[in-house]
Figure 1 (spheres, rainbow, N blue to C red):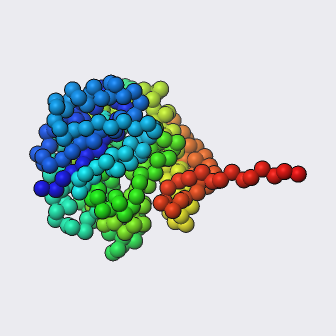
Figure 2: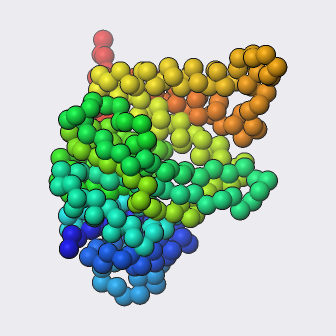
Figure 3: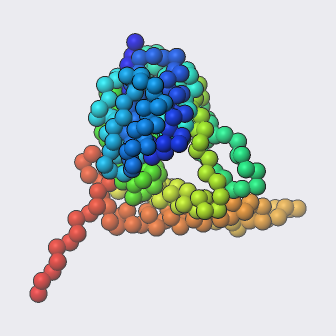
Length: 326
């Protein structure tokens, strides 16, 4: 059997047990689970011990540095499997998750990545604003050796359900530790990794048959939502800046399209018998769009001004100019 190393980066002891229990229920049994904790180690390690029930395939590591990407890099360095599977500590994988993705890799030895569905729960609080990432991709191959980027319609992959062949991860390198939850730019680490997989010529696939439930991923309330929208915007801006810094026109094009889309949504166009689009926008979107756009634009400009791309394809601060002495 193909050995799978499952990575879960965690800061949430309250939901971590459900994530671990879902891996223990997998029909594919040749796996190891590497839980990488950040923050207070005691409640996290206790949650791992209680949920694992002594299963030797589950182990806990602690990362001194914060950030989702940093934790995934810790797990990747210690993984022993041929396949590296990522999910999050607010998710529960369907029992056939690992069986489905290993079958995809077995059917195509040239495949380097499988991305799948991340399914959000229905809102539990009807009149409270909320948001939860949810993705259902098409069954599609993305192979840059045949068709250059961008990815074909329907292709999608997010970090909560991202599975790599070891060779593809070694060819592409580390996750960018300035991107993702807990890092300087609060999202976008998964999309950035897809861009770098493209650049490395890795063949990729998405399938709705690989299912992870985003059980505890919904965020509620006016206090949490602005932070969530800001995080989306900073990640989007940093992603576009990385593309621009690499000479990829998709970066500046995406920023232009972002501005155009938001202006269209807000100003709208008059049609016979129809009100302008701006008057149809829901309250949540009316608040979220400006925050996302402002965060994306400011981050994009900041990255172009203050950062560079190193030889691994990672963001690095530009060296400060030496002080000038008279």
